[in-house]
Amino acid sequence: MSDINSRLKPMGLMAADIMIPKKGTDLSKWAVVACDQYTSEKNYWEDVSKLVGDAPSTLRLIFPECYLEDGDSKERIENINKTMKSYVDADLFDTYGRTFFLEKRTCSGVSRWGLMVALDLERYSWEKDSKSLIRATEGTILSRIPPRKEIRKDAPLEIPHIMVLISDEKRSVIEPLAAKTSNLKQVYDFDLMMNGGHLQAWAVNSDADMDAVANAFEALTNGLDKSNPLLFAMGDGNHSFATAKSCWEDIKANLTEEERKNHPARFCLVELENIFDPGLVFEPIHRVLFNVPEDVFMAELSKNAAKVNVEKVGCRNCIAKKIENQDVQSFGYCTKDKHIVVTLENPSSNIAAGTLQKVIDALIAKGYGVDYIHGADVTDKLGSEDGNIGLFLPAIDKGTFFETIIKDGALPRKTFSMGEANEKRFYMEARKIK
Image (cartoon, rainbow, N blue to C red; front, side):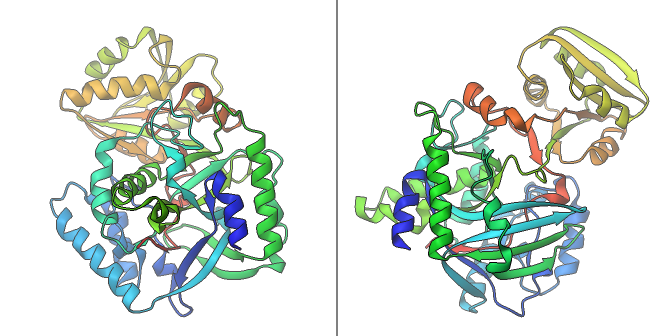
């Protein structure tokens, strides 16, 4: 097995010691959705808390972002670290040594496959023009790292929601494993809470399967542009991955070169997904502007295009049909009493998310508020409230996604999402980082 990891390490990969709660734990209460979901819907997280009760749960190990502005961050972080330590001390987990997990997530009748691995933080950069093997796909907001870092820096475990994309058109890494689940040991199989669907996993740790994974990744790596070798593109959880990188930079400053080679904090547990998996759907992330007069919004928008064309339509669904597959840059918005499709001539950015981000940045500088929303229904609901504006963005083409990142660098923040909020990755597996 050590030979497998020596083959994987040049590609920024490692088979990890993966931990899951022992048999008898109610996994439907243990697993909760990523902390950056439902950020404007505290009632969601309140319902989760009621459902979980006193049972062991990752809810007690995370900081849902809807509570970031509540003024009790220090207390919450102390409780997170205390609870995490108590779970470790109570011997809550089984550990699968040097293993990959093959995962199947089914939601609304659609399934997607993933592979749990550890990625080398030394091979990652969040810089927009990075040419690292692992890189951010959207702009990284450095101000979002410190609160996450306060949790991770003292934590004995990482429990990630990070999803990372590979571009494997030949379907050589994950799909052969998915075809042989009857020969793999299943490690869990349960329903997720709150309309999250169903989650299954199998352990991948035989010499033959490890060898096949290594062979497939070596072939993928050999096919990369040596001057710009993008192998792993962040899908979801970039700020969590960036936090792990920042913590590692602090830790390694006090280590010898030898100690740095295999220190557990050098790696971060993630789920890899093939961008060509038909079950993986790219959804746009929409925006809601709070208490922004429509004329103020339009004035800022006009500064970012030679011409702004507007068309009134009947409903949100009409917007979706109008803005997809347009030859010109377009987006939609709603207010309390109308739905509008906007097309831009000579916009200031290559994609609508970039143009709107410039508008949003200008509005924030003037004191206005914004939230980034997963789901058109919620955007429509919040945007239709008195004084608000809901912004609807078109989806990104996943077929040209890697090419776009290689050519243009990281996209504007919150450009895309892999699925709706309830389809996002749930916290499930853990790994020791101390």
